[in-house]
Length: 212
Picture 1 (cartoon, rainbow, N blue to C red):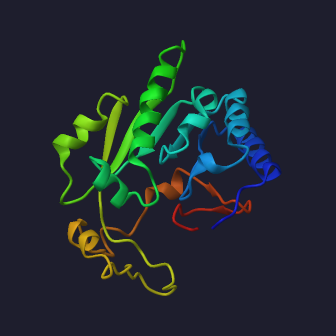
Picture 2: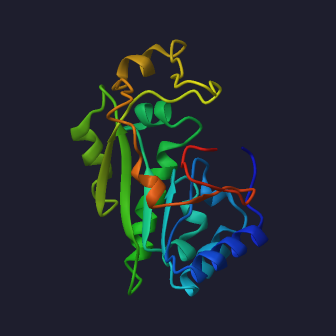
């Protein structure tokens, strides 16, 4: 929380991964990667090392990184909201007009490039989501949509048991989330453990992408 990965940790992790034959890197976990002061340098280094690079961002700072982002393989923008009111409710402290403008200008910028990244809007569907308006608003900005259902969020303060965060203080959010019940048998295994390793800002390698 509130920590940027130091450049020496980044380059060490990338070089060690490269030596092991790893060629896939996702430049994000739970924070906003485009706020990192060296993010453009990191992207360019990864591409120099022939990595397949993907980033997930809220899109608020795209306009400051067009050149570096154009070198990537995939840029995913996380958006919940089909108009100004819904977007700024579900995406706290984000500006609807800003992300709309950024995506429009980014698409124009990419059209001038011989090669460009695949662009995706990823969004979590709420019960009240106006799907028709959502697609109308964003469909001409990116190459595809990836849809995720919403669900309860684990409260990691409970160390010895799986507990969910309470959304009692936000009636609208609570009523519009799709709920699921954790089932120990059906959710016993997570395939990510065999596919990825997460390097934290401090340089620690962890096997769970939620271990932050």
